[in-house]
Length: 242
Length: 291
Image (tube, rainbow over the protein chains, first blue to last red):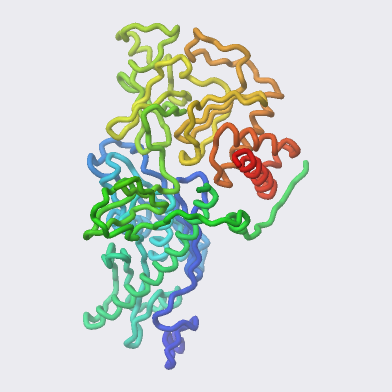
């Protein structure tokens, strides 16, 4: 839209944030009693709910069992009321499959699957607005809640590039404006990247800056999630008694 | 018909009301536990670049040179001698597959099973073919666990174990069931309870006389009286409220909770405020009893 500038002269974005600031994040673990692990996260207006079952016996075809590792199965679905226009999304459409595959790649890198051979771990994520970052953050909390051993947290954030400045944590307006967008999933303690995805054109000179902005934002997300998890563990531990 | 509506209300963290803090060392995945290489690593940890790093969120336990992290909530991990309650999922060639809330389905071999009549004889080919007659998919059994190769191996050698008849199953997290000498309890309020170590709890009416010969195969299908059914429902709601407030489950705690809930109606026990009140009272009684 002409006249809507994503980055003003004073360095403020459309919703009043600075270039490197994150949206407000609220998270809660253990929202479902029936599942092994569950978590709910709100990142600005984007809400994601993740549920984890496992490790458990492989249902369906026995042939898919891996003798030395666990099978991680991820499914993504998005609510019909999530975008501006109410749209019914059938299960198994291209976007859900692609997101499910990306989540699977991310979590296979983080979960220590050698500890549970011949079993299956299911991760179901439902998101509003379909942002990969919120899904990964919710799924991390849910996997932690289920007690499945992981190498480290997986924190994700998106980043874009406007007017020579790298912006971290894009909102819907900024995504819709059509600039380059990068999604990054990071293991904060070691700094290793679990998944890096971008599907737009960006000059390679700018890549370094955008990547650094996304990494810094992911580390900030980690600080917040870390606090939520510690609070949850402390509370549960107090209730169980010493 | 009367209807009741509730509006959502922000929950206060429960630990505030208890007013105490934990002295345990709590970690989350990615935290370094120690850089001292003299320690052996146990469950919940892994070695990365000369440091011992946690892989689950929980409390650190140290036994001499062994460090492990106990996760808050895990699937059932079998130990030799545990009592579990499970449901048959599959009938295979010489064994049954039992679902016990663990990482893999548990295995119950035909040779480890009591045959009807309690006889000790060699299992013949007819027994194999008649397996489905003994236990079918969907049946509930109580067994003793023997741990091996990743999947838990079960056996029902004594006549106490076997197929379960009428009653109510409650599924809770295995970490909330306290380890005790016996897991079969006959509560004075009129029902009996089996606390499986895997988190499956079976509540059933106390049989008037113990049947020795049956070996646990005759499913008693007589109608259960209303009084018994009320006691069982109340027990089930009490167990669910204890679990929501994360209290350990054992016969004394369940009994105290039952007594604390008597003034309320059975269906009211599941309401959050009444649940808190009952569990608070239970907690106090248990503290008084210990101290």
